[in-house]
Image (cartoon, rainbow, N blue to C red; front, top):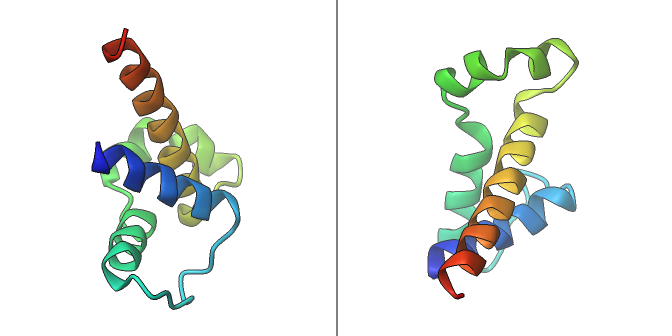
Length: 82
């Protein structure tokens, strides 16, 4: 359950345009967020090449993937709780 909360927090911060250089009180959460935003796996880059061709940067693509993952986890969680 904490993983879902962390993903939601990351998605919220990413959607607000949180800077990678911003410092926060919770360094563990910041380290996780920075790793997720900066490290886009090559496999995902290849699968979603059309997004890069249409102007997505690595940062905006990471935000897109984080938000999509958060939505997926939220719907998955609803199915489990039925």
